[in-house]
Image 1 (cartoon, rainbow, N blue to C red):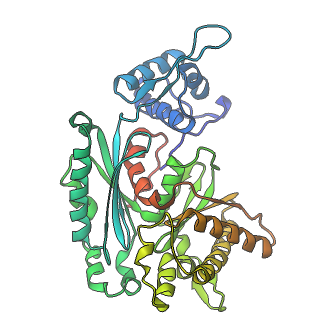
Image 2: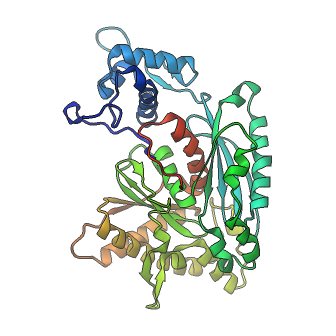
Image 3: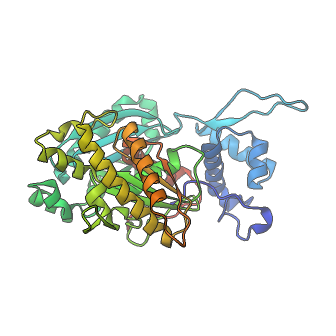
Length: 408
């Protein structure tokens, strides 16, 4: 699914409605509305004349669209901006209360539900920790948390909830050995469809996406506006995972599991061939803490700050950075991106240290024949999966140039 319009020169357009320019045909009105909303989301409040210039739509068409979106409660007029000549321009921005979206993150150690407004700001949050996720437990938590989120809204705003997205690790049943004594409980995920179960209880639509891809989608939709058109994305959670953005669109491939960067083969410090998930995951750090007799429970739900032995954290950071550097090089050999983004359920200072060490590894081990991408920190943090889940219905209903990035 693409989350931003693609703007091209007018002479480079062949089919109206398949790029970032609009169509004046009445049948494309829904597309043009999405285009306007996408532009304003990406660039902030804009006057009608600027939208007409960027999209190639006529001034009359833009006026009709803007009036309709304003009448629907999706846009708000800002203060007039006076120039040197002519009438003042009136920028229109997104109305925060124009629509609301639920996002459900199913993690290996906790479930989280957020309700966000049209700007992507969280207005309600609920979380629940567990030893391992079960379908019954997740559906029960979702039922209770959704009810709490709806009751948090004024009655007149509840019909504006446009959907719920679910960020779920795919193939959960394969991780019983890593999660401990949980094989039987995780086997239940083979036959349960929580997307359908939750959807059957509500009138709004429900969407499902791989959790790491969803986190990448949050960076794309809700992250800093100053982002590259193409980037690799690494999310350091209980398991390390990743995503890929190409030409401002999240790419998930045939099965919804493209850019499974956690599965990248790497050579560990002991010389053994392993996978990135084995060295860069928080599960690995948890195991290191447990081996020293330290309760790792304080890590979970505490992405704002950790109190861990410094020497142990240094070892984990070094091996994680070395693995990330190898994964970045491997991916760049196939896809020529100029940026790699690293984020995760880790404190900001740990994330900064991980990025700095990854940059150093890339610098100290140059690879001939490729241009190594820049490495930068993500801007969402621990909430990326939940917020990315909330962006699924937002994108489905209100953003332009939609490409399927849901599973199936």
